[in-house]
Image 1 (spheres, rainbow, N blue to C red):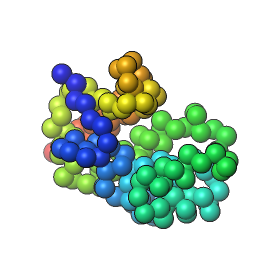
Image 2: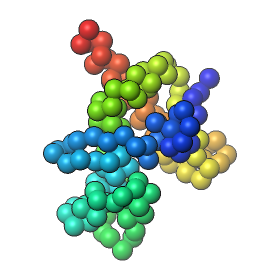
Image 3: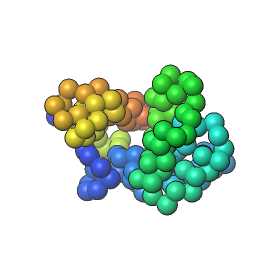
Image 4: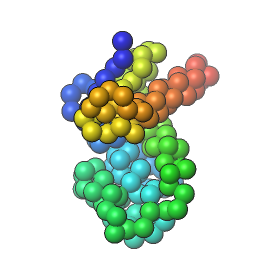
Length: 150
């Protein structure tokens, strides 16, 4: 049976990009994986700084979705890899939620969004669920690394 979550609240909220789990990557403190993901859309350091310093993931997302800022040309080609990195670093840096993620076993993970068909399953449950697939891929990589370290 698939594990379905939506938003950063409740017992499965740790799976969300908005969850309050920080990490360091490339010498930068990232408040959430959403902050990291949104900042990577831009090559302009000033816009990245706005996102890094955004007090909430919602504000980071709003800045990242603001079309008055020019998104990098190759964004569509790299955005899944960027999200993978964000999720990987988030879980590697937070052992409490890493344990929870590994405890999901081999279950499919679905971001049960109400309007997002690319990252989630969408309102009709026919979306691509790319974020859920990335969570599963990260879980598999981290499980493999944990086994190697035993």
